Image (cartoon, rainbow, N blue to C red; front, side, top):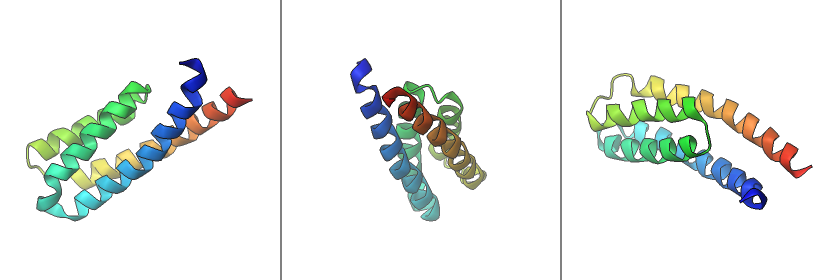
Length: 102
């Protein structure tokens, strides 16, 4: 698996960019987007947790829970927190990828 680690990081970073966009789009759709919001949050939670981005996974879990309960209140704030946390995770994982490939 060690040789595949850079590929795993690249895949996570690329997929995560799309997941953030899915969250933004589902949030913009309001009530019609709650199931999509929950699914996107669930998927992002799993991939984040698998790579050790624990805080990002927790934020996604909270958003998934809100969507499942049909609670739109606070969802925009959670999506914003997820976006901010992903910027940090992306920076750290990009640095990790560079370090690993040197």
